[in-house]
Structure formats: structure tokens, C-alpha cells
Image (tube, rainbow over all chains, first blue to last red):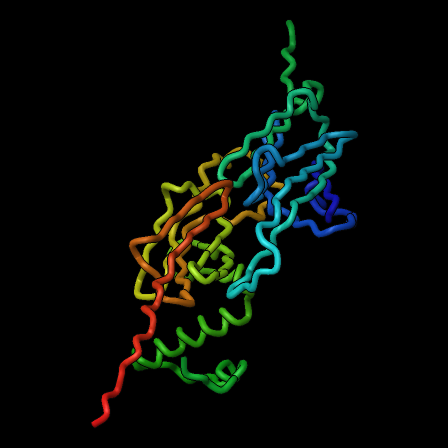
Length: 130
Length: 161
């Protein structure tokens, strides 16, 4: 599973290092978008239930772990194009994030995370007094 | 499908050869799609007609009574799903809408594919079209199709003279 970085340097925006974990995990596909005041992360985690999703943010590291229980054992597949297992992915977020105000929504197998930037890093226009 | 001997890049090494007849042009186009299909794994196959589509991965299992088809379709609103039976094929069609306003946002990762999809899945047994159940929960589509049970063989007595 990858440990990725979200930084502001345009050249190396995402992937940096690999981190392996025991067990079989699937790496969810994500879209990451940045606005002036927040980072938005969308992750496809089909089959996971809302209760089984665990999101951690610590020391600038965002971890998504979504449980997707196996549905059947010893079944012979006629067509088998995807595996079923937990989703796991970590990201290193270089921006200073207001951790207390991170919010998440889940609908139709898509997890949406809003990571608001801490006030200190929000762009601020300073008026010049006469 | 007719098996065509592999020509590789031969066609490109024949300068000046122009496909003139519509049939030849169609054949060239079919060859191109065929090559593209086998060069790319299923999941990244680009639907060549219209918008950039995607192909949801599916799983087919069967028991004595029913056939179960599952597909991973995260982000597809069940209202934008269109399921139908054509002969002995189950047709899944739908659209994964991207309704996020992306303007003014810097993109750091773009791995999710959006757009419409259409896929026909041949079924391994005859099923009763009237008894199909479909459910879409958490981005996982599950379709259960009841098999038509063959009527038990009837023994025919042969009368002798």
C-alpha cells in the first residue's frame, strides 16, 4: 500500500514511498482536489458500509481504511474480475490541516473527505492602511 | 469471431496504401478496435463511441437455483442505471456522473473514471425474465436471476405387439 504525499510542489505532487502491510488490502482509486481553503479527497470503496470506514489523521498523515467483508467462501466463479477485501491507503498531507474540522460523507460507494486548511495557511489579503 | 493472423505493425510499413472501399475502411477500424482491446486490460478499455467511458468489473456465480451477477459501480446513482435482458444476455448500462465543480481547484490525483458504460454479460443458464431481483447498495450492484428449472424427463413406454 502506498504512502503518498499531497504537497504544493508542482513537480512531485503525489506518490513518494511504498509501505507494505500484512494481509490483502485493495488500494482505492482517488481524486484529490485542492481549493484555496480545503483539500477534497474522493475515494471509490464499493462494497464498504458506512460503519466499516475508519479515517485517521495524525501528524499530517491521512489514513483511509474501509472494511469490505468477503461475501462467500469456496465459490466457483464463472466470471471473476475483482477481488473483495478491505481498502487501505495512506497519504502524507503537506498542507497544515485543521484536523478538528475534517468531515466525511459516504454515498453509493464513494467516500468524500473535506480537509479544511488551518487558518494560518489560508490565503489572506492584508489591507494597507493609509 | 474469425481469427485473423497477427500482422503486427505490418500495415504501417506499407506506405501509399490507401483504404478506398467502405468495407476496407470498416475492416481497418475493426482491426484497430480489436488491437486496442487486446493491448489494454479490460478495465482501461476506452469506449470508442462518444464520451470517455469505463467498464465496471463484474463477478458471475451460479447455484442450482439461480445465477448471481455482481458489479462494482461506485458513484453510480441507482436512478442512472439501466438493466435489461436481451436474449440470454444481461445488459448493464448506466452513467457515473461527475457533478463536482472542478474549476478553480488544483488537481493532485485523478484516478477515478467517469462517464457512461454498457456491458453485456452472457448468462450460463436459461433464466426466468420475470423473476429477476436487482439491488444496489454501497456502490455494489447485485442481480439475482432465477433459473428456469428443466421439466423432469418423462419416461415414454414403448408398447410391444
